[in-house]
Image 1: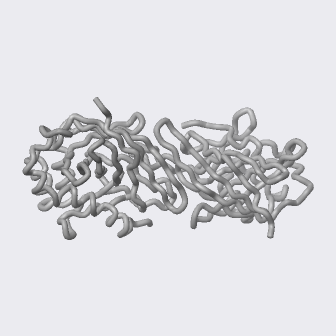
Image 2: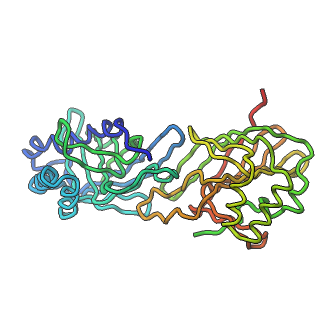
Image 3: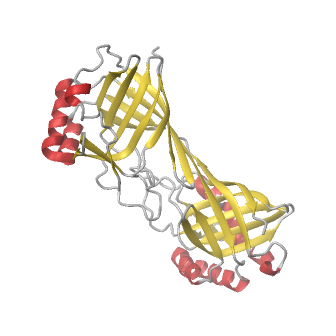
Length: 200
Length: 191
């Protein structure tokens, strides 16, 4: 049985921080009404490399609007009081914020937020279902149970270009220094490269 | 689910094509292969090593063919797992036993190599949220052509089941419905 590695959890610590710990600073800015707010679309490529294989996939992230602060707080509260299950339930009740598309498959984003940085902004999204279980094709693959969402973070510069990472199947748990831990099903992090904001 | 006559030369050609294996004994030998699979929006690649200690003798081969014809996939799998190990397929740190391997000349300076492992190597596409069950896909099958220099290409069903039928008498039903392309196969030089 292959278990998620500490490395995979650490790799997403940065996502965690952007998602939850920055809530206060983001809350001060009405996100979707500022320049760079939704609706907006990003195209890019997801890359994963393990010791034995590499994989690429093209994706599109369409953000209709960034999640209002009250909904973010409701989900954070649900996580702290109800754990992973509570978070997923709250997430699935939240309004649709956009879609993540890979090939002919579309996944609903119900958490989307952005935070300004020195070079642009960091955007975090959570889908209400897993996108893909990297490594599940191995005969001794671990159980998929509990990996109910996908979590991504993108660092976008002022010109609309960027990179990031994604846990295609993840479990959001309370704990750690930030109060939130993200456990990735994949043993290696999936990188998002060549991200480009679509000019509308 | 797609049924493909992937390894037509596998058991199919038993009496004719493979009955007379290459008179030149090339085993033990090993090959390095690059495998690729692509879809509309995604692709994956991996590197593998095939080590063949010996090619399956006719008696063992005949027993496998008879098992398939008489008892279908289940009997074939049972016979395969009882057959002596003749090599290994290695992907990263994982190795799977090869229990059937054949080679035969093809043209003036090529030969075809085919082998079957006693377990699946991996289930391509099984990471999809709506992936179908993996049960029943209990072996992997590989086929490639190699030239006299030691370069070649081929295909692989990394998780498959074998059944009797089709125009060749044997059909390989691969899990993903899409074969892995072995874009390059290189025979390793003997030290």
